[in-house]
Image (cartoon, rainbow, N blue to C red; front, side, top):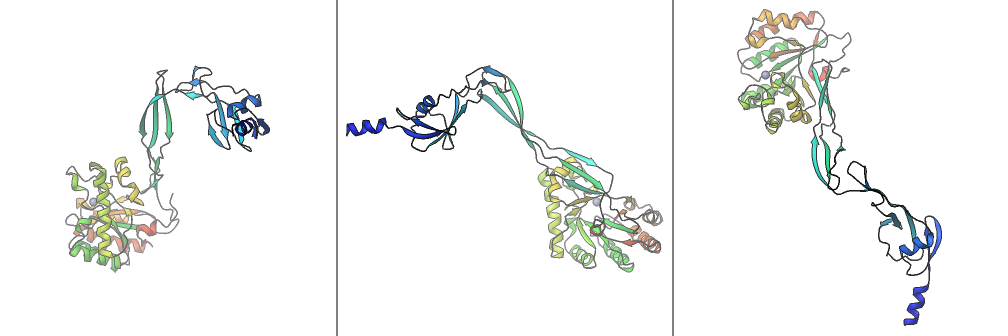
Length: 361
Ligand SMILES: [Zn+2]
C-alpha cells in the first residue's frame, strides 16, 4: 500500500492556468502550480483609508481563483481539470473605525402655481466616515446618495375654457353646509370640500354623504384642523406621527361617511405645507391644494366684498372659501350673487380632480 500511495503522489495533474494547459507535479498544490507556471504575481500595496500608500507591497500578495472561487490558500490541492486564474495582488486598505451618518434629503421648490405636487422618493442617503487605525487619516465616502424631492407648484393649462374651482374649508358645519350645497345645486356648480375629519359624525356624516352624492369632491383638511399642538393651526407644530395621524384619520372619516376610498388630494390648515410637513405627510398625499383667490370670507367683510373676490376669477383659478368654522352666512349670500354672474360670463364650476385633468405646468 505504501508503494501505491507513493506512485499516486508522484502523478502530475493537468489543469488550466490563466487559459493555458499546465501539468502540476509535486504535492499538486496551488503553490506548485504557481512555480510550474513561472508567473510572478506583484503584491498590492497597503493603503490608507484615503487610498494613499502606507507601505508598498504589503497588500494582497496575489489574486487567485480556482474554478471561479477566490482563494488565498496556496496549500490547496489541485485536481485534474481545475481552472486556475492568478493575477497581481490588489491594494489592501488598513483597518479603520467607521462611523455612519445620514445625508438628509432636500426639498426644492419650483413654480408658483396653487397645485403642489411632490416628485421624488424622499429618502435619506448614507455617509461613511472612516478613521484609519494605522494612518490616522479621516476619509468620508458617500455610500448612498439621498433621493431628493422637488415640490412642483403648478397650474392647470385650461386654454380658453372658462372653468374655476370653488373650494370650501372647515366643514361640515350645521346649516352653512346645507345652504352652500343648495346654492351649488341651484346653479349646477360642482365644488370641492376640504373637510375637518372630527366633524364628520352625526349630522356631519349626512352632509358629507349629500355633498358626495351631488358630485362634489370630498377631501380632507386634517382630522382636528391640526389644533392638537395647541400652538396654532399648522401641522408643522406637531410631531411627524401626529401629522400622519391627522391625514389618515381625515381619510378614514371621509371613507366612513361615503363608503368608498377618500381622495388623497388635501389642503393643509392655513395652507402651511412647509418642509417638515412635506417630510411627514408627503408620502400619504397626491397633491396639496392652495388657492389663487382668497375670498377672505372668514373675516366676514360683508357679502358684497366676498362676492367681488369670487367674481374676479379667471380661467383655471382656485377660489378659497369656508363653509365652516363660524357664521358663514355672508359666504352663502356672496355665492348667490357671484355664481350667476360668473355663469353669465360663460364659466363652469369644476372639482379639483376635473381641474387637474388639464395639463399641469
Ligand atoms: Zn381651515
